[in-house]
Length: 245
Ligand code: URA
Figure (cartoon, protein in one colour):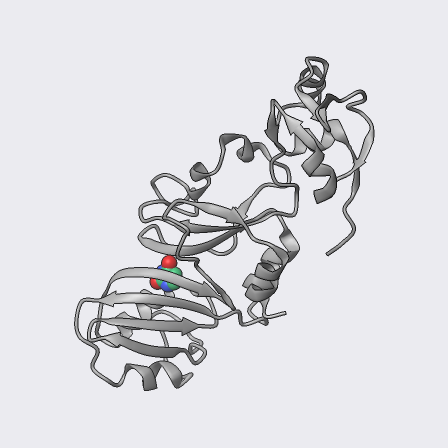
């Protein structure tokens, strides 16, 4: 982790979406910004934006929002989208409204389809995001698919071959691992993230995905106690697990 930056407190709070610097200064004047329980004396003072400092600060009586550099893991529910380009509510609508005004902005680490549920990471850490989606890193993504028809039996070999070509593409897929869980249910682990990849892979072997959930990314599993629509910050160990560091 890089050293936490020293930053003016009014700038930090404005960057976290609490308001313009002027609004944040007005909040401080009204005693809404407190350090160790006491109204902050100098909202323009430079502070070290680290976890130790953050735990001492309250805004309107509430703990400070996650500092810049946050990674969230979400259990994405069905029916919400990761992109403005698709119709429907966005995953960002599941986060507190104020977080939409953060700078740097929080964005999803890759995308899941509107009708895919499960593990989704969100971050404002561009470096982490690029590492996870980098084709060179080959972060494994494990999906559980419910299928329209029973598995034929030859899918695992076809997916593992490294020769499967998806319709409209000119580069074969990297080898992927299929594990049959039931006649109509399979876990598929892929190392890349092409458009609608899992659904198109099953379509390529004459099947149809009726439900899809992402169960893990790298060594990070979706926790059982994270309900659909819920999210929580990922700690250092969780981030390292995703990247296999
Ligand atoms: N593959 C798909 O088809 N959809 C997803 O959302 C993710 C992987």
